[in-house]
Image 1: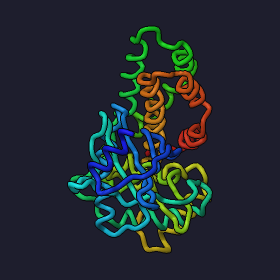
Image 2: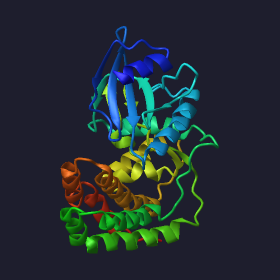
Image 3: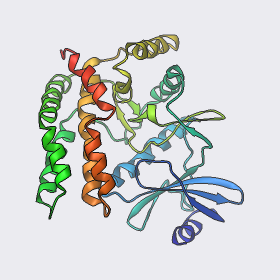
Image 4: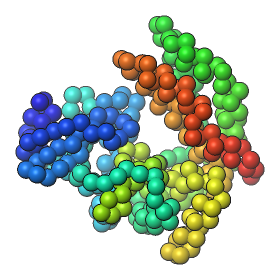
Length: 306
């Protein structure tokens, strides 16, 4: 297999077996075996995302240098690089974490681990997540691009049209949050971007999948929990217990909720544009408007932005 030959040539490994993995939202994933030892390989071919994936290795290197031991270790190439190019994609190889990819864990346990991440000072070379309207503006560009494609799928356009009032409402709320938050000073921390959904439970607790890692306000990680008061209470109590001083900012919670709505929608639309087989992607676009994020949107709508 071409990938095995490439890895054996460019890494200090001797891969004897390879099989498809089911982990990971972006790209192609594999489980590699090297004389009984397992590794995890991920190749991102997505034109709109692979630079983000490549940049994420700087974050992982930053954390590993600070001896954070609950994230997957990166296996370097023979020349000492954290990732490399393979067939127009970006390839990274990691230690294999044996366990269950789960969201069923005590929230306090996640927050305790995140605090250890937040206490690491972000390297100056790390990508910053600025308060912007980029996700909405990218949505507008993608919509125009889809309309201008040859024979666009009417189901996608219909789903977007049927939810036009919702889209406009979220856009208006996003603009309001942006106008308030853009000029406020916010301390920056290393954030995963979806830590709550990237936990691996095995012999110990791991936070995996750092593809979207950026230096950002803490709320970028924690807005997922804002809609349940008991979860926010756990976060604050864990902060207090560990002496981590940070007051959660509900303006930022709302900003990341509304902005992320368009970010996730954009992922589906990008996949639609690039997919050779579009049926599943069309279904994903249509079902997105009745997905989990609407509960967070409903809560954010109740908040007074000030």
